[in-house]
Image (cartoon, rainbow, N blue to C red; front, side, top):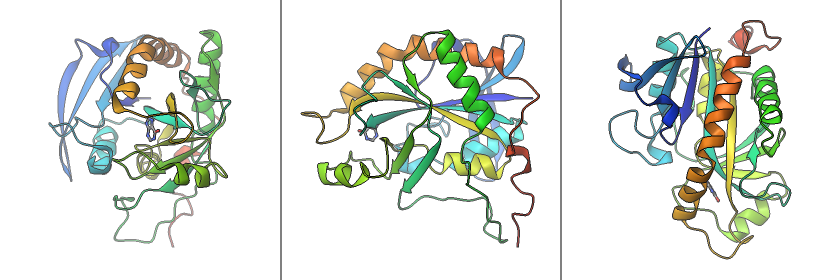
Length: 253
Ligand code: HPA
């Protein structure tokens, strides 16, 4: 078993990691590797993996996931920031989504462009990994919600109040980086779950929204997230009752 953490921000627990440059069909990807809790853990900053800082709509999600796959990663914990549409998910809350809606517009969504593979998304996130994250939050007494619908927007702009009113009929949180990362991970048969940090109430639900506010909340929560990752890494076992490994069975026409 090989575990990877994908995040939009560097984490102090990975300071002093060994740097790797992994060759993929989409160019080289920077990953780091460290032994934690007697396990080999990979870390990838999704924005910086190609050498410069890329906005959410320009990230090469296929390069990132292929690079992890080449390192034999089969388990991914992803970290991202979100705005909340649900009054029960206030800024500072950790949200572990169970489903998503894709409102992105111009990304590359699949590894399968030459054959007809239709991946099942009935359970888009790994149920086992979501449980590990939720149990770890409980142990650490972190305020969290273990069910939420994530709506992915194209960005890089934030949403309008009218969009948020529309999304509020179907979703709890909005963010820009989950899709297609979660889909590509499933295509590589990885277990994937996400830790979303609620940084703000979405547009129209609070007075003003700034990128600086998002960054401030992330740095406030960084220690909690790092503790959560270490706790989860300890608890992830080889034995799991999820279907992620069988994602490609009966998927091809
Ligand atoms: N919208 C989209 N992405 C975000 C937000 C938001 O309000 N906050 C943090 N990431």
